[in-house]
Length: 312
Image 1: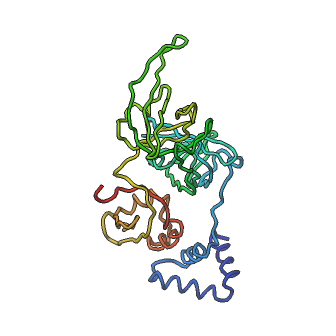
Image 2 (image 1 turned 180 degrees about the horizontal axis):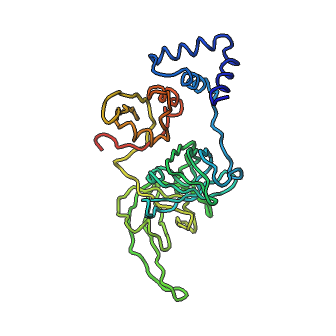
């Protein structure tokens, strides 16, 4: 039995005697550019007969590959340089908190906030960590953004706003070690609050007027405090997050073809291999690019991506 046989059986269960007619119709729809096996795969996907197994952290074992997981991002670390290039760690919690290591496209984490619920594909488990060398990270639910006046004493929250008054670092010695306090005034457009951190690198480069996101800020004595679980992200005013509206493939354009992608009402063009890698896709034997897009369209359309807006 090959991998396509169970899918054919599912099509028979769904369509009965019409299954073969559906398969032939799909091949004709794709102008004969796909094999019978690819047509079966497409039909099964379109009718939601193929389900990705979503693994739990407690189920992962050494050497397991092609892992799909869902969980909440609880901490994001800065990137660091390795012999293989940039790398970045973050914590993912699906009931079991674990470390995930991003080995490519580390800027994906710039559009993800602590507290966001995400789905990760194409992971592999090694030495107790989830590794992502060709990552696909989809935001399923955004962490709630709040206003300063909504935070009660002793509670944490994610806020977006502007640096209003960057204060000088205050250096002091405690227990024989030099420490530094970082602080600035922050406005969420309704109210201002002082933000205080201790020995932080992510606030040094901030300037007055910078748009930022504070993640896991703690309200303490009427001020926002940053601890080791907090993060400050400078928001790129030239970049926006929008949903993919459409995606088509142009044969023969660029290097091996290109995609024409509609995002938030704007049209973008990108080379085939770059888009496939970014979406965590790979070419399937017997299936043309148009077939792959048809196969994945339900997952692709509506997916959030970061893009540069016209005129910004």
